[in-house]
Length: 316
Image (cartoon, rainbow, N blue to C red; front, side, top):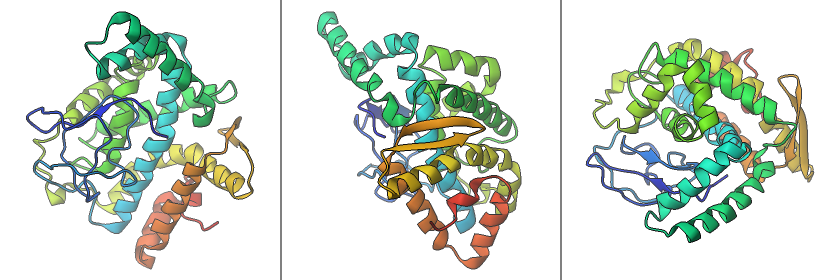
């Protein structure tokens, strides 16, 4: 789900390269410096564009099993955490009133107040009208908010023990989370207050990741696949409780030509419009898993065993 919100990626000198989602032509490498004003796909290989790279470094581990686990978290951030961001931004009137003018002035700092307010109102109305597409509605709101609180605490615990999710260097998974959390933790008043109360170190982590150009990116900085499976298991359990069953149900509904997807997530009902793009996400993840060697597939299955993420590796 793309947003019209501006996105800027800056090099280490702080120069703005543009106001669109920008990714490296090679999805493995991107500068470690970014500032994201809206819903990003910047580090996702589904949105690629030319980018002049400053000190190119890989954002994926060379180990295939670890790389696949990074892809899972990256996709979770792109597609599930974005539901949280969109929900808190547009379903909460206080937040919508706060951010709509801000988005206009980010794009047009010199806009006159009257036209800017009119543009903000029109844009907010359009985005609020799309809440159902993303999956935010009266039925799903409590699930989204409970999931946000859990993932805040999980991530706060992880970054208390090491600099980044997969070790001493940032990965595509870190950057994808960063893209959503720059908004949730710093822009939307309601979600930012929840984060301050429940995950105090995460705001500092987001700020730190804003410019990681100083990271040495040592190839030995990645955790081993076994360390990843053990230390990120709580996060995989959260993905398996929420995003994985949604992806499965959405893909099934899409394949059947159904307009709505309905399921239970964490024991509560979830319903939203069927989302073709997220059906594609599941297909791509399963294809990526199928391309792994037998040994690497076994390592992933072991990491996912009992988490609920098993459906992400199972052919339809």
